[in-house]
Image 1: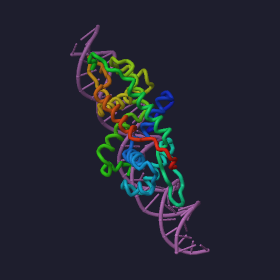
Image 2 (image 1 turned 90 degrees about the vertical axis):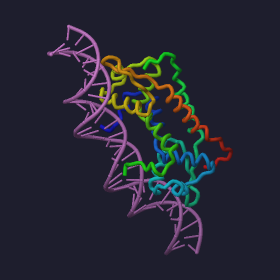
Image 3 (image 1 turned 180 degrees about the horizontal axis):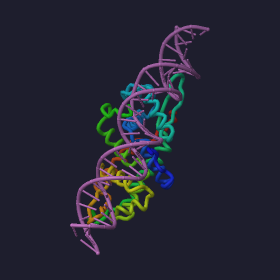
Image 4 (image 1 turned 90 degrees about the horizontal axis):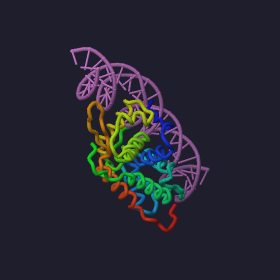
Length: 110
Length: 110
DNA sequence: CATATCAATCGCAATATTACGATGGATAAA
DNA sequence: TTTATCCATCGTAATATTGCGATTGATATG
């Protein structure tokens, strides 16, 4: 085991869980926050900003790139990253839709 | 390693990542969705609804209970779970605040 | 009391994640 | 061309997560 049984859940559930997982690490939160703040791109700077090794940052960047939350462009010898607006907006909407499903209940059931 | 270096991130970043992690599994998404739909509580039903063993469901319920997203009440020999409205709302707001930080950029930087 | 039912917990196996040093490939600069 | 810089990837170690069978504790019911 250690393997999620994705086949017993709906695509939507698997996708939403995957989206949460992409941001379920403080380094990836920090990276996206930094990219949001410096709307212009960056990269090696992230290694200095956060206190993680270059290989580790690269790995987190890859995960964020894989889900499409960020995109990177080679600029000479360095790589410039920035938020992918489209995916970001999709995440925002999907998360909002998830949380909005709950409607206040009067009676205290538990 | 395998251990997240929480100490190099801010409390907010660690907390937000933790919130994401709580929902970063399809079973926990499915459980919350089911509790949202049947606003009244449930429990052993979840074992039938999702196709996971009782021990596994119990473990996921515990995680959701730990972060406060759900709460449980003993009712005779069974346990009744439901959404914790307060925490749910807090999650909704926190996630919304995170995504709202990004403002559309005109120039294509990447 | 004896028995049945429900759910939490323990213990284990399998897999995933996190982190990093080392290496390598690409580009810029000398 | 040689050298330096930047970053992706590989390989590895440590830890975390997922899933479940088995057990246990609590509460009902006969």
